[in-house]
Length: 98
Image (spheres, helix red, strand yellow):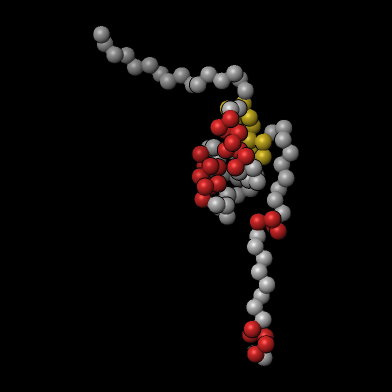
């Protein structure tokens, strides 16, 4: 028998998709979150993707929920104080009188 090549058919989903948009840059995020955002297919800011609605994709979106907005769910942009570690300035130099 001759082997014939067949085109790969896309996975059958029940027509359920999620629309997700990358709202915040993953530059300062942890490497695991950066990799998750990249594996979701996001390359640019404000890029919108149609993703299949399954538990794997939902888990990936939950991991990067502070970066990605999902249509139909409220997106709360993180405030600076939530992820920035504030440190007080050293006052040693000022105590010396310099």
